[in-house]
Length: 320
Image (cartoon, rainbow, N blue to C red; front, side, top):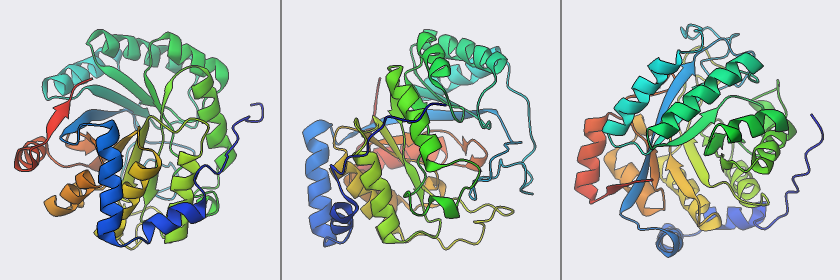
C-alpha cells in the first residue's frame, strides 16, 4: 500500500485536550453541552445495530479482542454469513428502531470474493432504507472504491488509542496502517467511523492523545465511537483495571468539544454502565448508541432497558 498522505495537523494538540480533561467537571460539562446544542438536538440519539458477519479466527493480536486466533477465549471461528441471513437481521434491527446497520468481519483485510459478498449485503441493507456501515480490517484504494460503488455510507476503523500507547496493545499492524486505511476510505468518498477504547491501561495523557489525533485529521470522523474496555478472559487485557465512570464521561465530553459536528457514540462497555453514568454521557454530548443485546461477541444493554432509559431521560431515536 502506498504511503498515506494524511497529515495530522495539531488543530487540537495533546496538551489542549489534556487541559480539557483536567477542567473542573461542571465547566467541562457546560462546554460539552454548549457544543452539542450548537450542532444537534440534545434529545435525539442516533441508533445503530452491529452484527458480526464473520466471527473469530483473526490473525491480528489486538490485546483486547476475543476474536484473535491466538487467544483462548471460547470464541469459535465461523464462515462469512449468507447474504439473506444478514438481511433478515437488518430487517429485525430496523423494526426495533435502528437507523444504521453495521456489519463487522474478523479479518486483517478482506479477500476479493468475500468483498463481493459484503457488497451484496450493503446493497440489500440500503434497499431497506437504512444507513450502512462495515468494518472489515485494512483496505486499499481499490477495495474502498468498490465499497463506495455498492453504496456504503460509513467505514469503521478505530485508532484504538494514542500513537504512543498503541504498540503496547497491538503489534501486528501499525498506527500508520490504520491511517492508510482511513486515507483510502476518505478518498473514496465514504464517511468515516473512527474512535477508540479507554480502560486498556493507558493514562490520561494517552486519552488526550487519542482525541487530539482524531480531532486533527484533515476531516474529523463523522462518527466517533468511544468504547470502554470489555475485559475478556483469555485476552492480554483480561485483568485491566476498569476505568472510573467520571473519567469515561470526561473523554466523551472532550470528544464532543473537539469534534462538535460528529456523532459521538457510546459503544462497547455500556452493558456494565449504570443509568446514571449513561445519563452523564448523554449530557456530555454522546448522541449515538448501539442497539441490541450483542456487540460482535460481547454483551450489550438490552433493548427493553434502553427503551426504559430513553423514556426516563426524555430521549428519542434520531432517524436517518
